[in-house]
View 1 (cartoon, rainbow, N blue to C red):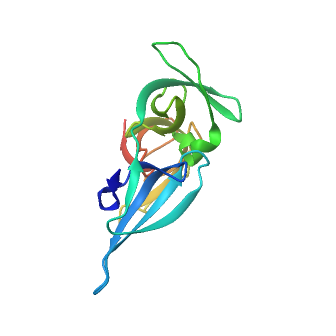
View 2: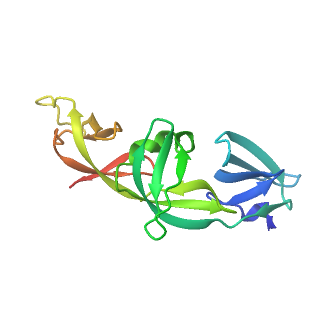
Length: 185
């Protein structure tokens, strides 16, 4: 059990037989009353996101997740298939768990999958990943003031805002946390 004041982004806990991961944490202190903790959480089994509010001093049951690194193999439309390089086990995970992060995953990407009691319920992507640009807007001559940017599409379908000098065929590094351009590789 942990105090709700100790919850931070990424904390996992169990409440009413549901597993939750904290997405955002906000401590609200009123003038005369006690403080409240407002968190945005994602249900790790259903993928739904909700807001929860707790009074200061409340406690929740935290859980520890086992991390296993696996390589992404392929997608069949509904499931993503991974492989554990030690046991050669090939678990399939529902595509819905990844949401829009599925655009960051390409073949042979090493992903850290998180298990709770043998059930894979969450994941962690690498911080930065490299992608090849397959489609780019044309750069406009003379439009160089105020560091202009343009949209490009990479080989996984992800759309990224990049500087004007990035062209089709270039390899770029993207931060998986927010989808922002880091550098040209």
